[in-house]
Length: 234
Image 1 (cartoon, rainbow, N blue to C red):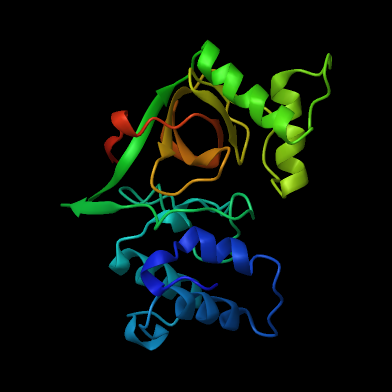
Image 2 (image 1 turned 90 degrees about the vertical axis):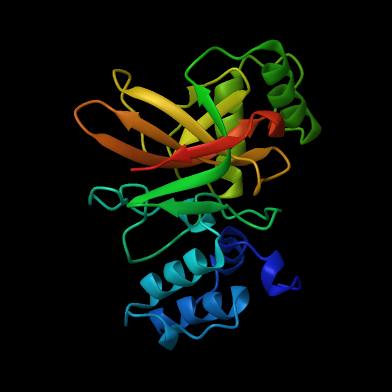
């Protein structure tokens, strides 16, 4: 962790700390708070160390802590937010960018600079991006009969991803959710553009069937900054 406070995203710190063992659970979160801010945990209106970390992130304007494999809150207007507890990154891998910008309006959070994608077959550019990434890392052999989706999931597993192998295809790439998404759900994929990996970016799926749900995941594909927009969360 050599970059300055303002240059460290919450997700980067979560990834860096993922495999570190602390004697006391609270020490893990106090260390993460110290890595992103000069604020002290005692300045937050909570005694819960995980909640204190998320509050410090929110005050800093970085919501990249939402890209955690943790369960989501079931409270209205907070379904996007992880519940307090462990806060493992969706992928314990080095990321770049200063974080996930967002702002509040009334009770709602708006995630800023998001790329919005729908469930759709890969276009040629998206397919080539995934293939080239797999080839460059020698993950998929020439003439392999393994599907693009299976090869991509195998690569993510090697990197520490523990989510579903059942990806959601979009024009720009493949989204692997933390938990399996049912086929009959209405799905919109929200992909970060201000915090990313070399092969893609973290994202979160907005799912609707009988109720609204948010499922974080890993997007492998091309990022188009030109279409980034603000998205209202619930």
